[in-house]
Length: 471
Ligand code: ARG
Image (cartoon, rainbow, N blue to C red; front, side, top):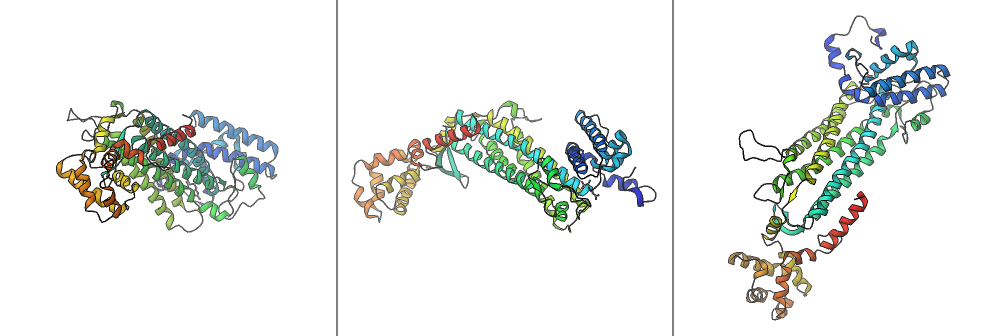
């Protein structure tokens, strides 16, 4: 049975067979493996290493196998170690000993590297679509409820008011960068190792470029030793997956807080919540928590892969077989997390009034008041100090900045060392102007720069996102 058995006596110890086999994991590469084999057969035919009728026979056999894999009817034999051996033996069962010509000029080392690159390419294409869907979910929510005003925070303390749409669009930016990283990874991964052989290059004049083009690769790897040793593309993919998971995890974290009744900013739909086995009152945002938890696993996949590679000398080492479980698991986790978060976001109920009430707590418009003084010519540092004393006074008397009386405002300006502050303190229009700036709408409107939270800027950003996402 062992395709490499020529020099061996006796059978492989069952513990070794069990320990080394990978068929349960790598069978997901079957269609990629067959695609690679079909292209390789064409290449062998072009190089005159197979006669036209042999090409014909092998192709017919491989296409039959492809149908079996697609239908799920191919029986995987655990005794045959991995997907490559299984398919080669299944081909022999179909077409006879001529199957033994398929492996001409090919090693499992360049074969598995090819398969994995093909798998990653199509997986990234699927993930890209899933990231876009997640972006659409955020943009739809921003369209629906994005004009709610919420507290933006730093240090988890109230900082400045922002629009909910602004907050949601921040995640859209992160996800767009994730798409960029996936695309970068795909571009570097999309070269063909086929023809590299075991490590030194195939022993036949194969036209590697033509085979690569047939498989939709952008080119060929330039060094056969690198080609069989390299798993940079796996590390890059895992890094991109891990960062995307980190982004989802941050959103998940925010949703868990926002849905806490103390915040009450959002309600998670029942269909995206679970209950407690003991506490009848409980409604928990478990999907968000699990996204946060699974981000940890994907980070683990990345660090595990890097650890796997760091001590490997060049040339294929069997350690490399361990690249697949973390890669496959991480891709599946990211895909599922994107889908569940998209559903959760789209079904959130936003409580704009609770958000607005919270946005006004903690003197979040103080910066806007200082900005208003600066527009009157006061130095920013002096304005910061004046408004600081106003905040202290408002806190002492238990009012908002927009309710401070004229005398309090004049008194704060009077002790300033800024000459402009001293000249404007008698201006009767100033207190009203500062109180207006202290309102939420005034504060928002003031942040009128590209990328700022002023409603017209957010509206433009939302329109651009909608256009890009076809919404
Ligand atoms: N199952 C192996 C892997 O996933 C395929 C390559 C095996 N190559 C070898 N020389 N044993 O890495």
